[in-house]
Image: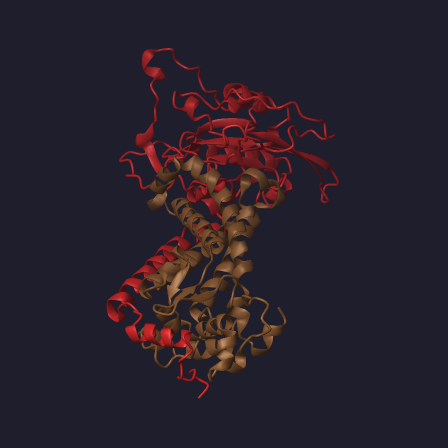
Length: 253
Length: 322
């Protein structure tokens, strides 16, 4: 894990990331374990949002019907919360390194207007994640930490004797606020996947097209091409032949 | 002596409840149409200065409500159990206070329980429609079939009263014997009290009676005697006569100036509107953006470039490296 650091590049290459085929190029973005992990997290987050909102405002109380009533909603919500916490923790371990901020994120953010207008030509080449995706990752991480810690404080069935009522009041307010922000981040996350065509297949089949990777995560694609094709890259004059990670431990033999 | 409430009539008419769902002024997590005629406000007055700590009220409460408290432990104090529980709706709390002015050791005994606030924090916090109701006579009551056991009422209450049962996972507290009052009786605790430390009547009658008691106490040297009917919660329908009304917290931590916590008000007020607005705005922003900017599509050129790169014919230098 030490050798590739000298280019600063493969921090965002993760286990399973690979290029295959030429016409069309297919890029493996998420292996099955990561996808299953993601969808467990997604399902629990949606169930939590629905059950949580049903207890948040009387207008949505009817949603408790989906959980066979208020008592069950109250009972099950914290358990789903635990599932989310552990599932997201695994995602965190998988993805945190690729989400570390880099200089290109700053440039990308400075051109956020172009991003929103679909003018991609003048954007910097990016690794596996852009600054928007990194924002989703880190804000979800922080919010889920707030949600689990305040959630335990207000999980009266098991934890009521351990805190005062004053602390519980603050916890329930913080829990509601964190949940609101988390739902907003989730909306951004889902919308981005709808807006940027070709994204969904990354989480359904684990694969994106080469064109998608070229358009949105070109640096990552270049790194992968070099990784797969290290020897060839060294033979053919190529701007990236110098970065051939001949010492990469992940390189297929 | 306050005139005792006559025994219940056995006439057929008498058993018909005198108030019902039609008399609700508040219902948790719901809007109610205010009743056209309001019932006379009732109140229970607990004269702490007349209480002898016999716990007849506690026993009567258990008996009337068919509750059974577990056999506990003797902690070396008179309080038993040590706190309110889902079965103990009312609890005698004993405080020994060394009065620095008189040099007397005073034994302050307060019957703790739901105060039946005019502005009930439990009801404000409750997320479940109809689990907590307030009648126009002032009674705040829990409907267990609607209770989901979330414990929000505990967070809303300024007096730390409701308790969640570990058996049926619903919240319990004093009902002010709404079932007895509905048929013209007084609360069980009041009926059992041997010294008239607990009296029951209309709120106005109780205030007048308290006035009389306070005058008596003042004539006996309790210059700070007064009525505890805290305005921070809009007044209560369980009131105390205290010999030291200037220091309510002497009485086992009775709040000096209770009101619904600001945190609870923010949580149940602005946060709700802010939250729904923010989530709605995020979703609308997405729709608007899609309508204006449209989808971001991968082009044929992108695919070709990727193909060239993969076959090692990419001659285009990476952006930012030129």
